[in-house]
Image (cartoon, rainbow over all chains, first blue to last red; front, side):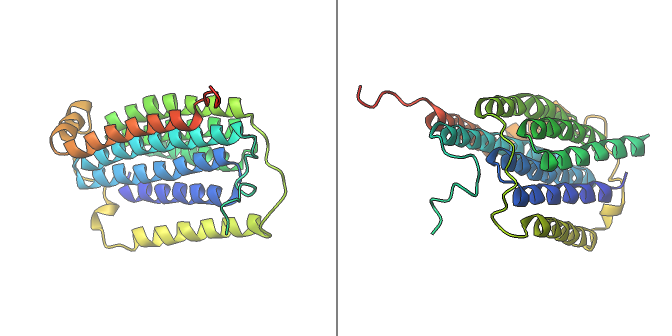
Length: 99
Length: 171
C-alpha cells in the first residue's frame, strides 16, 4: 500500500477526533476523543518512518504513547475529583472559571 | 493480501473512531476505542513496526483501557442530556470537522513529497523489532527516554494527589 493511504486515513481519524471534542460534553468522552487524535498522529509518524526507511519515527510514536498515558492518568484523576465534589460531569456546566 | 488487510483494518479503525463519537453511553465509547486500537495495531504491523504494535496492544488496549473502564464504572455512565447550550452546535461541528479533514488532505497531498506515492524503500527483516528500537532508545534518544520516565512518575504522583481520599481535616 502506498504511504499516501495511511496519511489520508490518519487525517480522517484526526478529524473524527476533533469532531468528537467539538460535539460531546462528557469529560470522559472528550478524553477518549483526545486519544483518537493522538493515535492519528502516531499513525502518521509510523507511516512517515516507513516512507523514509528509518526507525526514528517509531521511537517518536512510543514517546507519544507515554505522554498519552500520562494525560489519561491525570485526566481521569481530575474526573474522579470532580465526581467526589458532587459536581456535574458536563463541561458546559463546569463554568466557574469563565470570565 | 496486503491491500485486503489494510482496508479491513482501516474500516475497523474508522468504525471504532465513529463509534467513540456517536455512542451515547460512555462505556460503549470505551469499547469502541478498544476496537479502534486493535485495528491501529494491525496497521502498525503492516508498516513494519512490530514493537510499536505490541506496545499499542499491551499498554493502550490493555492497561489504559482498563483504567477507563474502572473510572466509567465508578463515575457511572450517565447519558448526555439533549440540551444544547450553543445553538447550532450539532450542525456546525460536523462542518468544521469536514473542513479540517479537507484542509489536512490538501496539505499532505499537495506537498511535493514524491515518496508519498511509493511503498517506501525495502527494509530488512529486523526493521522495527524490539532490539532495534531499544538500541535507538538507549543510544540516540536517551534523554527523551529518561524525560518520559520522569513524566510518568510525575503523572502517577499527580493522580494520587488529585484522586486520593482526603485525610480527615481535623485530625
